[in-house]
Length: 198
Image (cartoon, rainbow, N blue to C red; front, top):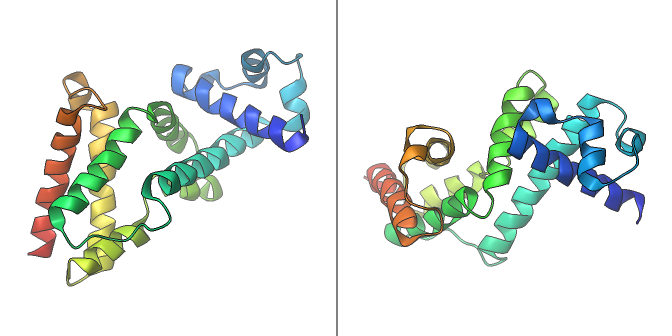
């Protein structure tokens, strides 16, 4: 296994540990154990805890981008059809709640941990959603200030996901992957888009 593959496996294991046990569980020894590596292997590749956090943050950002690209495809373009746009966004949000739940939980835990470190906080804070794509959608809907409305859409999406993972909706939200989950998410996004489009 090449060094880059080993570093990627270490970062992936760090993400899993944070998602399953919280940020405090993220140690070099815990990563060694998770990967079945000899004691001290992780610290050979990633010397400090800060470097371990950085590896996890960067890997989460890469995984989020790869997932979105695979989901959206190379022909992704904003849809001027409000209902279609809301449905497409809802599918992406639902994936974050279901298939990508561990990444979502790890992202929330890590973003709180690295808030004071701009070079780690910024890429992680922007990893799940693209304000540029949101602004493009708002422009296609002919919203007067597409950049501001796009930023608001990102905030709405962040809130919808957070509420269903950690907030009050997490207690009784429909099962991710279900039609009810996607419909609930789509309805909230559609109300926002129609209001923004006037």
